[in-house]
Length: 130
Image (cartoon, rainbow, N blue to C red; front, side, top):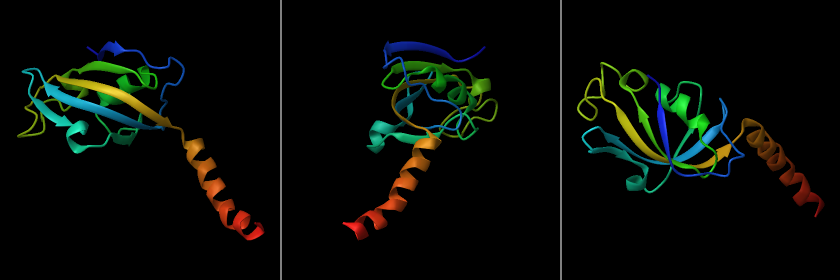
């Protein structure tokens, strides 16, 4: 069984993250009993991570690329694509299905970061000429 996604509201329908992109996501993570185990809203800032390269649970690496920028969904991740038999005691019990209400806020492509780095390297030269 894979990740299931229920759309709460649609994104722009154009910009989808790809493996290696950096995404900014607001989410609330809940267990099947409805209890919250994590929330970016409680921390006051979105979660920023490189997607598709194993830095998050496999369910996120599989599911997030299906979202377009601005989209809000309820993503259900089965245990085998989350923390499996080990869980994350005492927060997430073993063999837990996880439910994430998540919103894809932004996507930054590696090429965008390189362009910004390149642009910043010109700043001292531009200031010297001005």
